[in-house]
Length: 266
Image (tube, rainbow, N blue to C red; front, side, top):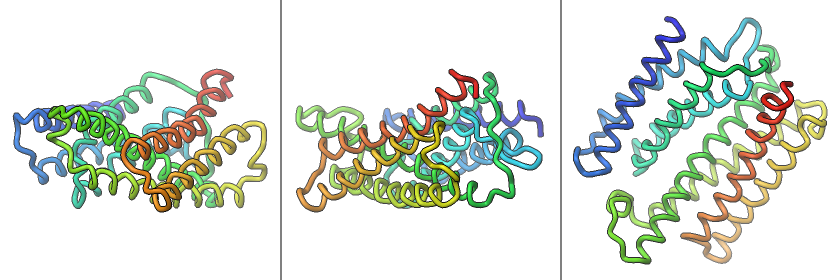
């Protein structure tokens, strides 16, 4: 199937999914898990086939800036669909679907130098897979932290907004956030370990900033988890620490790739 057809199909399905989630959020449509899952899976299938055509090349995989973004957004939707089967995370689809659509559009209309990784580089591919999973989990954690922050602010003001009415109780929101952070920390640690094992010079010129910001983000997340269990951090405090750690991690990945590929064209 042609790349353009797959892209248009995926964008159409993501648009339908976003519209349905928005209507459900505004109380104009009853939420239906089966329909939500079906539309998400169909969009995910088209998105995945598109990745197979644009990321995979003869003898290797292209992990350049926009191609990596398409892969990460696919994994975010995949994880969210799985979580939605057992956790109240449906509100996050309103952000995840447009994000996935945006990455598809940008991957088609922009061009950056290819960064091919050989199919035989199993160590490097395992490092990339773990890194992408960690970035995806922390992106979801950042969205969850933002919702938790807004929920706390509005509840303190006794503001019965649509957001407050649609979100689970604060305790549930906090539990979900820390589950995401824990999972992300595990993946990030494994990504750093595999990077140290399989990358010849982890502090090479092109990787120094990425490594530094990744380690700093890990320190922030570990401090957050320690504060949670020793000082009972929650609510707005937990949200701020999560967003700070996610910002550092995004600088590590997107900041370094943006500068290298889009500024210096390397």
